[in-house]
Length: 141
Ligand SMILES: [Zn+2]
Image (cartoon, rainbow, N blue to C red; front, side):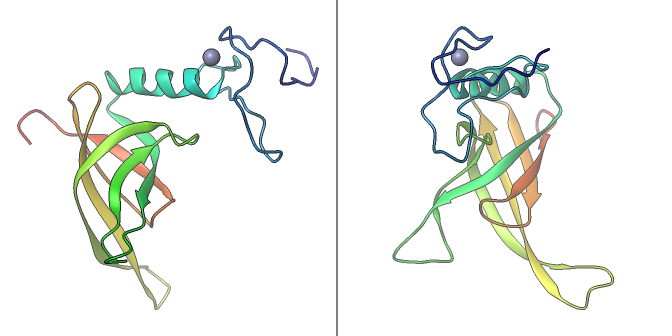
């Protein structure tokens, strides 16, 4: 491992150059390839591959605005940190969530969906654009 800065013209460990990116981010990642550098497409592909055998994973709750009904967003899905698709959400709802010690109520978004391999997953997260823990459903559940 060295500290040489990676530039956009460099070839990453995955064999590609860094992905197009905004100035605030690098255009490449190292997760989940164990410290090796990879472009966004290869990071996303490796996360999709992990879903085939993983029982738990992390993703981000994503959706598109619904101009006709702001509380029912469209195209609900779980994505990687780069926005790559992981799970197509087939069913979701919000529930009030009591936060112990804090006398406030917050919502939780509960979801169920399916990955590219046909596995069923479920989870819940604190809001749109936020992280969500993902759990694989047992067959028939
Ligand atoms: Zn790549």
